[in-house]
Length: 316
Ligand SMILES: Nc1ncnc2c1ncn2[C@@H]1O[C@H](COP(=O)(O)OP(=O)(O)OP(=O)(O)O)[C@@H](O)[C@H]1O
Image (cartoon, rainbow, N blue to C red):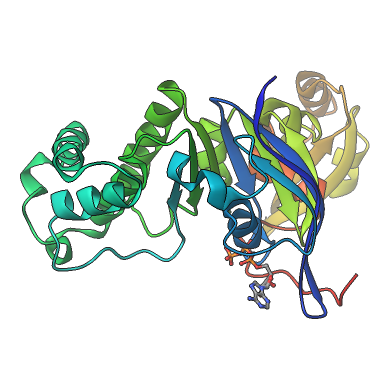
């Protein structure tokens, strides 16, 4: 498929620290690509290199046919991780101003701003000052400001951070809308649920290195199904059940435990469960769980995406 973005063996070093290591991946035109990893994995560094805001130490990046993001900056929309639009501006003025920086005439920018605010349910706020808006509203306005020039490629750095679930959902719909009208979207996040719902493709990054590139379903297929059992059950009895490869004790309350069994590849959870009942184990509650993208991330990288910055390696 036609790639709007391609990275080949990209490296970024800050002095002796090797932040991005031999990174190669592609983002296909018109698709939503999630760039996932815990804090400090190297996501922002990579996005800034793609935009041409900082140089690569080595390797090659091609975006919209250009080798330097700055050459196609009018075709790119960027929502940085640090937010903040001019507090005294109205949303219409702020959006029109950012669009004008990308070549959209003032009148047209204001017209688009009004239409886009209306479409996002922010029509009533259009003439308020930015500082009077809630955080969720301000973040939507900022995303509109980043895309009012109708870019072919949209780069969003942690767009969901700091938003409540309602506003996160609104933002997800906006991002889907961008792809529906043909834009390629690359967004970074450490929250796997957004990626799970939105992405055609995910790239998992851990300590600067790519751990996986593919669809969400492909990522999940790398890991296993789980069976959770609660009751007065010995972990050893669960280990001995058919299809079980590993057992963890999640919770102990007197004699009652919650045990989490990881099933072997291709094992049928129903058969494991049937064997537990046939053997008379004291099962008081059970749950068969399909792996989430979060489980797949931990399986593929050994890092928890919700954890703080992972340990820094010395330059590799
Ligand atoms: N200008 C810089 N100088 C030195 N080290 C840097 C610089 N920018 C980033 N780093 C380091 O590079 C690593 C990757 O940082 P980066 O911001 O790219 O990660 P990230 O995945 O975007 O995480 P976060 O979501 O926390 O920003 C971190 O260890 C960070 O401390």
